Figure: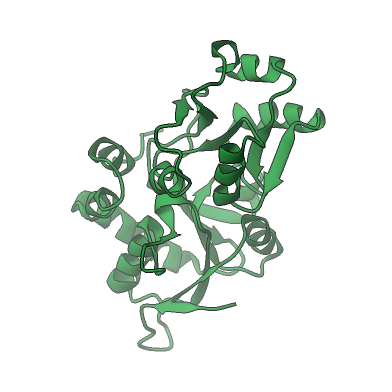
Length: 260
């Protein structure tokens, strides 16, 4: 496991060190043309380390291993995480990407009758690709489970693999989000060849930091949460998102969480 340290411990009571699992996915974390990792999550974590003096050791891992380690109490944190009731048992979430949800990505030539959840499911020959270990939300996960039971789901390690399978015609659709898709589609030469179907408009896929309830001190979570709120208020989050996203998506992602 290769660790990249952000921030520094200045005394025995300093925040961290904490190990933070990253994953490659679209605009969130990807290799640029120079072969260097960049993206929204890296910039957000670097800014958090600077503001809080927390020592955050980032490393790349799969989502399956990440969530297993968080559940087992052997990992401190991860990024761009979707909260679910099951995950909230062992992790605490601090959102930083708002107004985001999954769209179904399909080839432009997919027939009109198959361009809804019901239509796709009724078209028995169609196959869906998913990333192993991902959660997609309240509407989509039960629907995916139905396709999985029928042997119509390909599970892969990451979105890059799914984009390649779609380009090759091995699958007919996969889910991804506005904060992810631009570099993903561009790298796989799919920009003008696919449609983005808003098939679950009532679902929310707001993304946040996930902290191990066993391993991360409550005061450190509060410290990082306050820093996220300050970054949202002073425009830092919006500026980070604008480096990687179109203006409308960047503004929506940086919006304040809805009151409950």
